[in-house]
Amino acid sequence: MIIRQRIQSDPVLERVLAEVERRLEADAAHDLGHLFRVAEWTVRLCPEVEPRVSIAAALLHDVVNVPKNHADRATASEGSAEVARALLPTLGFDDSTTTQIAEAIVDHSFSRGAVPRSPLGRALQDADRLEALGVIGAFRCIATGVRFGAHFFDADDPWATNRPLDDKRFSIDHFFTKLLKLPATFHTLAGRAEADRRVAIMNAMLTALGEELGT
Image (cartoon, rainbow, N blue to C red; front, side, top):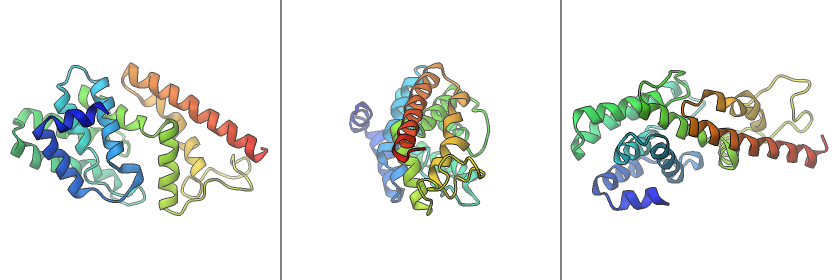
């Protein structure tokens, strides 16, 4: 992965990564692979920003990881931004760049429902939302559901034909309550195109699931 190589060749980014690893919790949906992929796409979607800045923002965007079912979930990005504000000046980032990164981290959060203020914030939000789509997105959705005690689907009514959607009980319901709708929320053209491609994969997975279930 190119991002891993960039980090290994940059002592500053190595120190950012070390701080993130120190705080990282056991969560398959928010592991180092997730951070590296978000960094890769943030760099791609925001060519006008120095790659080191985009990578630092991506590495730190989930450094405070509040569980999705926690009452304080919407404040997680603010906590991560505070870590960035404290850490980055010690590594040589100037005040303006530190603020740019911290604001992007705050703005990237889906839970806040805010439109990012900067190109970096928009790219980071799109890059993070791509992780909710495609094959990896399906894996992350199921992993998160299992973590909180959800079933894969309702065996009696997998498509919620005769019941309300309930993505806290059934992970497949989350496809319909949120994930398949995400492309419309993207800010960058390249991000939207990739989101559409990944949603097509998810729709194919759902079709295959229906065939396996005979529904």
